[in-house]
Length: 54
Image (cartoon, rainbow, N blue to C red; front, side):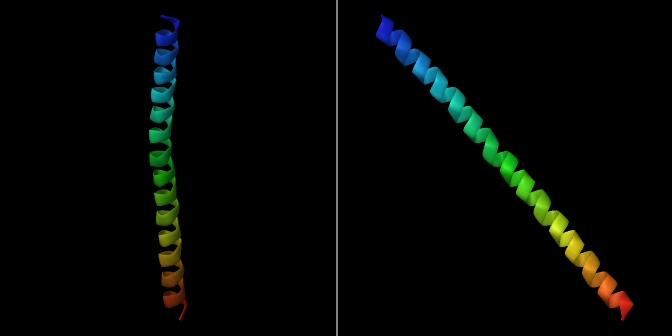
């Protein structure tokens, strides 16, 4: 009986860890996408300033 409880606790912990790991990549992906968008916007602003300067 005690082994079944231990196995159930281990399964519960693994499912919790799995849920946490599934949340992290979406956060990282959104963060990197945000950085990419900011970089592209800054690049475009720089090009526009260079064009209007000349």
